[in-house]
Length: 188
Image (cartoon, rainbow, N blue to C red; front, top):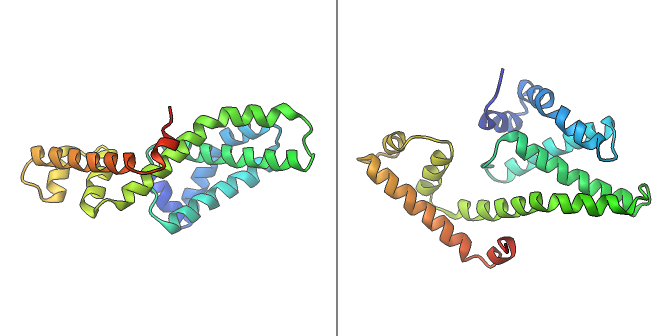
């Protein structure tokens, strides 16, 4: 059985064993492969994978988690960043003597870090939107049709739903652009 990203997140928050087993079977092999190819072993991968699930669980307990990517991409990014931190710790405690490993990996992780910071900034401002705008934009992200959005929100037409979606999106964009962190995160 396949689970949607939303079902996976709900399963994590409810500690659903079926969902957790699905996550492990579906996503662990690629994480294990990544760890083994980057100076780790299967045991490291198991520990790291568990830590990533715990990180996601804790994030969800603090505030609702809205993903703009699929779950595989999200957990891979978390595992990758956790592993880079682990390599850094090992380097600092002289477990790894190869100087180039960390620098190379951190260079590779930079795009992931940038995406994470952009996502964090997006989340911060998304949470500040009014409940209607959050609901409209979330439905748009979930590929709900304008007709369905109009019905769910009680709007009289698809045209008005489209207008509200545009207004909410613009409010979110303006809010992000006016944040002092915007230039640091989007310095491209």
